[in-house]
Image 1 (tube, rainbow, N blue to C red):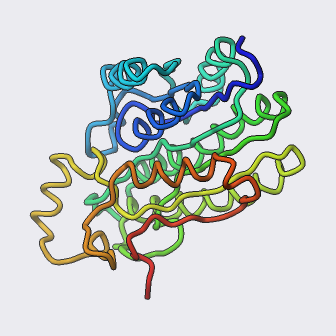
Image 2: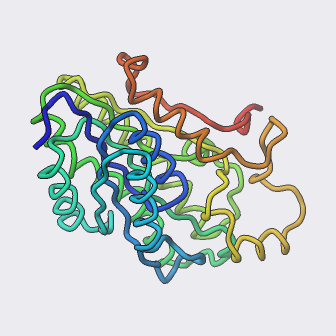
Length: 273
C-alpha cells in the first residue's frame, strides 16, 4: 500500500466523457485513481454506453501523463460487484479520500409515459448507483482517518423541472437527479464528524457521448424548435466536460475545506429566471 499521505480517488463512469475528464485531471494532480465503469450497454437506454476499450483508453491517457490508475469493470447497480472492484483498487493504492460519483444515463426522446423498464434502469443507475458508490467507499474514507471529499454529479434537472414531457424517461431522470441531492445532504450530515465533505454538482447539458450520439441527432432533427436543452442564458449550447471538472477540482481541494452540503451549478445560467 501507498503512504497515507497519498491521495486516492474513486471515479465512476470513468471510461469516457465527464468521468474521463475528472480522472485525468485528478491524476494530473498526483492523485491515484480507481476508475470504474460498466463497459456495456443497457438495453433500455437508447445510445451506446462506454466499452472496455474506452476504459483502457482512459487508463492509457492517465499513464501517459505520468499518473497511476486502477481500472474496474463493475456496474454501479450491483453493490457487491462494485465494492469488490473498489476494494481491489484500495489493496493497490491504499484507502480512499476522494470520491466522484459520476456514472449516469439518460433517456431523452423515449416518449412512453409508462415504460417501467426505462424508468427503473435510469433511477437504478443515477440514484441507486450513487448510493452504492457512497456505501462502497465511505468505510475506506472513515478508516483512513484524514477526512476527504465526496462529489456527487447530479444535473440541473436535480434542481429544476424544465423539460418534463410526461415520459417515464424524463420523470426518471429528474426524480433520480433530485434524489442525488437528498443523498448528498444526508451523507454530509452523516460523515461530517469524520471531516468528510459531501457536495453535488449540477451541470447543464455537457458535450459528451451522452448527448452527441446518433439517437440524439434523430431527437434534435425531430424537434428543431428551442427546448429546455437550449435554455442556457450564456451563449453556449453545452458546457464542456472540463468545465465540470474544474468544479470537481475545487470541491476536492483545500480551497473548499469548509464547503459541504452544497449544490453547485455549472449551468451557463440555465436556472436564471
